[in-house]
Length: 313
Image (tube, helix red, strand yellow):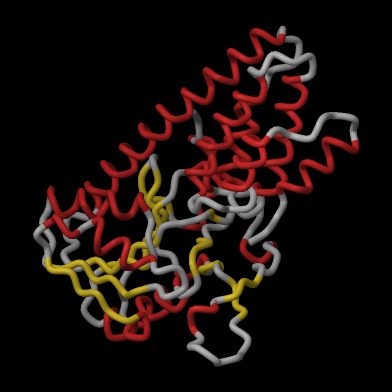
């Protein structure tokens, strides 16, 4: 696990501020060191933490809150643009406000984001439901709460024959889907991820969540997502990403840095020794994506950048 939170502590002390309090360090553990998974969760945690720091009432509380916001946006922004987009929006326009008004603005915007995020998700689900009425056997790879909500919506409104879930052994994401959707009274095919090619022969669509989306429509998601998309394309099965437009970053897929490696020690049995290093995330190339399902409707990768003017809180 990374330990970026200690970098923030050093920045603060180097600039003459006190060491951040325990609640700040605990919050950064969840956000920048990803003690909690999910970019959307990181947004909620970030906005509330920034507002809390500003509200402490010290002489430099608002300055410290802005330093915290800048640090979070910098560290998480490239990997999860929605975090940087949300944090930058929260602190925008604070210049010239009194500390009291700045604190109120930060608190109000943290609440406004939550309301707006729910509204954007509702719109995404409604527009996707209108488009996907013919889908009967969706394949879903690695857990995404947005995709889980979409599958639930399709099952209730249009009916499904089966939900195909290849298990993502990288982070056990398929099992989360199986448990989350078990109450739908729809057959669930829970398959090893090595059976993705077979699953693609009878699926009629593939749905991927997104940690983030590149400017040209590539999807950053758990390893195995690209092979899932390639298998689908080989069988003429459409591949849809599901993402809020705030998840779209400023770089194209070929401009993104290499993904960091992590260890997968659960692959080894007792007394076995081997390297288990691999990326946890990868970029699904835009050429493999049929459309991104967004709050403004489905957007093909080549039109994603021009659709960003619809993005708003």
